[in-house]
Structures are given as C-alpha cells and as structure tokens.
Length: 163
Length: 287
Image (tube, rainbow over all chains, first blue to last red; front, side):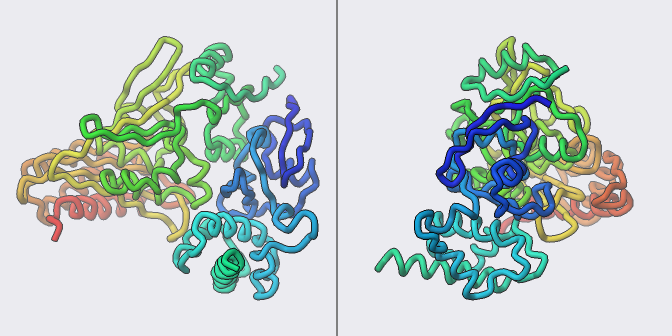
C-alpha cells in the first residue's frame, strides 16, 4: 500500500501527514491526528455521524479519501468552540442546556450539520431543520429535542448577531 | 505491483492522458460516495485515483431555449435539487435527484458519478432516458456523444472506454404538452436505493397518448427502457385495461432478482403497479 504525503488543514491547523492513499478522512482524523470527536457509526454513508465541514459545507468523512481533503478547510467538532477561550459555540451550549444528546455518538455530526444549515439559512423552519438533519441518525431517538435545540440555537444566534 | 497513488489533474486533457497512460489500473473519482462504498464492500481499489474535482468547467448547469439543459458531469446532486431552473423546466430531474441518498450524500455525489457507477438502481438514469438525454464523452481520440439509454451494459459496466471521461449530460427541451414523473419505491421513507424506480414521459394530444417513454431502474442488470409497453399506449386513450396491459408488458421486459432490498416476487408486483401509476400521472390532464 503506497503512502502519500499530504497537508490537511483541520480547525485552522496544518497537519503534515503520510497517509495511505485509500485511507478515509475520518480514519486519518481519528487515528493519525487524534481528533476523536468525529465519530464513526455505519461507515458507509448512511448515518451522518462522521459529518465534518469542508469549506463550510457538510461532508461525510467516511465517504471521502483523506488525500482529497488536501487544500480544503476542514472543520471538526473540536474546532467549533472558541479556540482561544474554549467557550462553547452557541449550538453546543444549547445542546448541553436543553439535553440535545443522550448517548452522544450522533451529536458531533448533528451539531456540524446544524451549523451549516444555520449559516446558510439563519431562520430555518422546523420542517427545514428536519429535512437538513434527515441524513443524521440518532439511535436514542432524541429527534424531538435535537430539532428544538437547532431551532433555539438559530434564534439565539440571530439575537446575538442583532445585539 | 506497488500502488501508484492519487492525482488531481487541473485539466481534462491531463486527466485523459493519465487514464490512457495507466490503462485499466486507474479510476476516476468525483464525489467518491460510490467508489468508496465499493472498496468498503471488498472491491480492490484502483492503483491510481484520478480526482476530477480540480478540473474547472465540469460543474455547471446551463440552459438555453434552443438546445435545452446542459449539466457538467461533476455537478453535485445537491446543486441539481436546488436549481430553480431545473425544478421549473425539468421537474422530473430535480425530483429524482431529491430522492437520491441523504442531504449530505447529495452534496458529495455527482450526476456523472451516478451514471458512471452504473448501478441498476441509479436514480438519475430512468428520468434522463425518458427525456432523451445525451452524454458528452471526452477521450484521447476526441469527443463523442451517446444517448444515456445506450450507456449501460451491465451492473457497474458502461460503454465508457478506459481512457474516456464523461463530461456533460445534455437534456433536450421537453416536447410541448408533455409531462414526466419518476416514482421510486424504497423500504422506508428515508434514504435508500430503489426497490423499483419508474420514469415515464407522455406527450398528449387531447386525451390521446401521442408519444410515451417508460424507463425502469432496479429491475434488470441495467436501467432499461420498456419499448413494448410504450407501443401498447401509443395513439390510445388511457383506461384501466390498457394500463394493465402496459404494466404486464413492462414486467415481461424486466428481469428482477432477489436481493437485500426486495424479493423478485415483490419487485414483479411493484413493476406493474408503479408503471400504471406513473402512466396515469403523466396522462391525466392537470386540473
């Protein structure tokens, strides 16, 4: 198996890596870089758990080659909080305050997908939230609260930006 | 032999020459959602991945009144779903795209990839076939065209030569007084491959079917066109007996198998039901 030298920009940091050409992005994030916030569940593109943001838009990191992440801005759940103060992102805060997670495995993918949604559509309807998250499975079945958290987060972010 | 690695050429010309140089050992990767899936299921990875994501001019949706719609092969399914132009003028294409995968898969997956992966259940194939879409293919010997209908040769197999790349999908303007639909049956309401997918297009002359096309997915080794079923309808007024005969004919033109998604027996029932339903939808006058 031949290796390729690449530089991956993850959460604003450049990582110089030597990876298997066939390695998926999620495997490199978790095993090579050590960012285990990104979870893997189905590992075949069906559950949304491994979602990361690539140049701001959601991507399934189990369904892309790590080498194809080169030259792009990759954001994982670890990159969402304020990198200097450690203060959680408003969406993360809402998930904590309003019990947006139970076991927590789907949570990083849910939050990043929600962030991309709110960035694109700051005032989503409940239907739009459910549609945007329809590829993110929560096997605890916490969809009601997750949906409420995303709607509340959108409102909080809107209020914050108009302050 | 050692693995050769991964290239992201900047131009189509470079991509084609890499393909020619490495023969059958190289594979084009676009969104990667199908190729990675095949590797995860145990398929040997190619020696060389050629990522076409860096090539400019493969990701576009263009329209003009005369020639119709042109979609770059690297265009994401997401862009197709969200194109107001496609939604308005080629609704069946937008609808079929919206049934493919999850929202995030649709951002990664591409229309060219859906066709080149050549799954019998490929959602984009039946609607493109009934709209008479053509493919533009670039190879080391220049360019060629081919109807989508003739593109597939078997599961995962197409007429694309090893040194060729699909570059564009061309969809002519719909005929006046025509209507098209894509009906897809899945196991659940969520993202899934089709158990059976049916696209129909009909041109009506009052209550009479002037022209009609029927294409089915997931019922044979490739997406197919049910020509005999079409002939039954042409020049007729649709009624229950006619639609039953049409559904029966479509069934005879299919060769469904048992797989993880459905038994062949259930597929056979679905073919008749969905074909009838899809013909009804495109032949009933809109109130």
